Image (cartoon, rainbow, N blue to C red; front, side, top):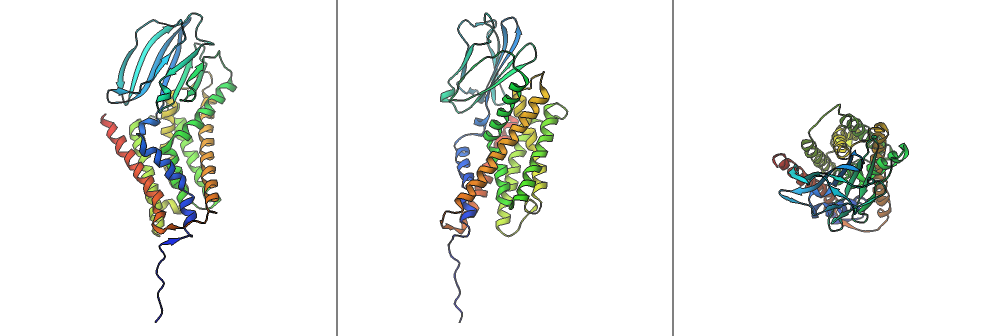
Amino acid sequence: MRKLTPIAPYSRAIAPSILSWISALLLLCATFAVSADVFRPAYLELRESGPDSYDVMWKVPAQGESKLAIEVAFPEGTEELSAPHGLFNAGAYVERWKIRHDGGLIGQTLHIEGIAAGVTDVIVRVERQDGTSQVEQLSPQESEFTVKAASGVGDVAWSYLILGVEHILGGIDHLLFVLALLLIVRGAKRILLTITAFTVAHSITLVLATLGWVHVPGPPVEAIIALSIVFVAAEVVHGLQGKPGLTARAPWVVAFAFGLLHGFGFAGALAEVGLPQTAIPVALLMFNVGVELGQLIFVAAVLGLGALLARVPLRWPRWAVYLPPYAIGMVAMFWTIERIDSFWG
């Protein structure tokens, strides 16, 4: 009688499949530890309203009646022309008031107090009377900035390019969607087509929404973006079970369809910062280029890590191949429920 060979509980063959995507689990560890709201930055707007005077808008993330404990520290000699008036609205606390500083704020340094103890960045926008603007992104490591004089087109382009890169690399939901696609798509040509389709789609809706030609409510879009990650994670599982779905057969179709939704998400982030009235096309183009550049950096890093770790001779249990898609799907489902709940918050 022929002796049957039992299925080995461990296999080197699937090691690249697991190790190539270990970055997914590293990303997910961070998302389990904090709420999705943490990834929303605080926002400071200084709008020049007259000689040496400014309208201030200060927006910080909040939950219920509790807001993040960070404050703006203006340079010495700044006086308040009106008392701050604030209210809680849509997961944020928004304050508005007027200030004045002799000689204006050009060349003056402003600080964000408490950011070192927080977990969010702060986006700063200074809008001058001539329509030009200055955009900065502050972090716990760099919590101050100096107000500059009117900048040229080159400065605007660079500011929005960096803003786009930082936004996509800090957008865990967008990165998890791309990562889930990479778990399915194989081959350089198919990966290129898929990423290109995603880029074209989110570029279209980013432009349409930012210029005000199309308006879609933000909360439902954010919930559907989370659901798009759940869908692709489920497609990964189906492929592992020998039942490849639409994403495996035509990944560029799925990438384009959901990319349209992700573009509305990018537009929402850009709306928080606004566009300089004198250089709208340049700022919009460079923000989009920055998003794409950050996305390509992420894809290259994941593929490079996968190629490197594939050389490591480790054995993994066969069931471990399901860990990345299930982890991605669970986090995305958590975000979906949380974002739907915010509809009535």
